[in-house]
Image (tube, rainbow, N blue to C red; front, side, top):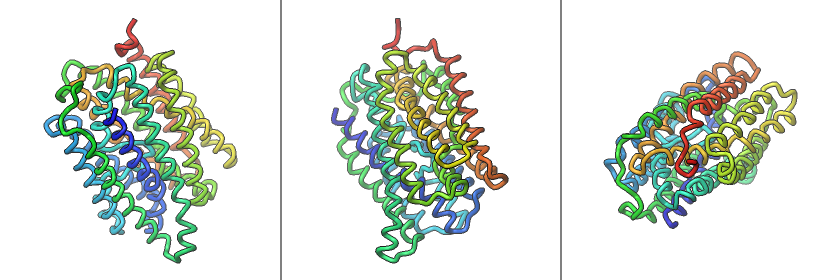
Length: 396
């Protein structure tokens, strides 16, 4: 189980960095004088770049050892943090966002993902697969929540040191880069060669039809999720309710913590009702809550709805990953992880710019309504298409 512990720990390190950079991104860009639309465009660029890298890892990564690819991704993460802290012009920032690993989504969209998921699928018995992915997702979500909470330290640091907020934010991006080096140190604990139970990675073969079908349906969920990325969510809270940076950090900490802890329920729930039903039956009410939040008359009502959403919206994460790994052959797992994770960054890459544009047109939270509605459509389509495609452990 040592490889599993290594992968879970590395996911936590990356999650912490994603947590504070996702919240600081709109603050940093607004401090540089960029509009909400420009924030959305840069967010789109980061997600498009992540999609390209993730797809390349999924389809071509079987030619290179996974450990070596993880080291390369860590080096890119370190470079991203340094360059982002030193770049102030809009188009150079777009380029850095596109080629780098910055993650403004509130989830995990990165080239690390297909590699870690395929390795984790081999790190335990099939009966423990969903439990391992729940621990993996739990650690990432909880550390992301702690990362969001940590931005509340900027105000006391500013008061204590007298350093301008912009400089402190730039320093935070350097810390993000250093976290990439810490993740690389953790990956050194992974074996150089595949484990005994692991087979050689290959491109998609017999499972191609199901994987491409899932990827197409995941596009709908990801496009909807792009309207709800954490950076733009934070921007809405700042403008709609006048929330301070510290209060926003506390909010994202608690929603992230609730989402993380709820993932522990995914494995026992999936054993009772199946992976597909776990994904859909928890996701639909969560999407209804985010739609209702757009009509909330005050911050207390909005927070209550979003806390309920947090309790439900992430239980599908370990179930989804476990399902993909279960319905493909072991050799196809890395390719399947890459192909099905690409929609999480590619399809969602186009909606943040549209969401930012909508925020410039009207104060009403149309992105929340549109994003929630698309996610409900995804759940219904997933039930219709894949309810009868069962993983081996659910076969009658």
